[in-house]
Image (cartoon, rainbow, N blue to C red; front, side, top):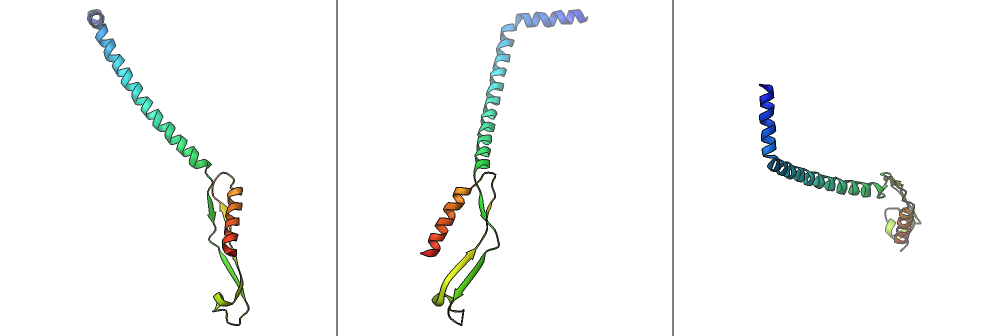
Length: 116
């Protein structure tokens, strides 16, 4: 009985080998397209993740101090009688790459804005 079942299966496969091969080829093509699509999406996501990881992030600490020096006895009128204003804050590198040049540029622009 077992050998008869095997003979029937072998005979069926031998008779329909071309159509079975075509169906399996179509299945292989569809599977390859599916994997190629998801591989493309994963590569795109990884490239974006790498770009975000290499981007410098700069933050300012919450502790910002203002010091005002004036000539007048009443410091409520600071705007009219102020000789200088000093602002102290801490710039923090939040990213994984150095941001030395960006911080220098930020400090130069900040000092220009305070002076003018």
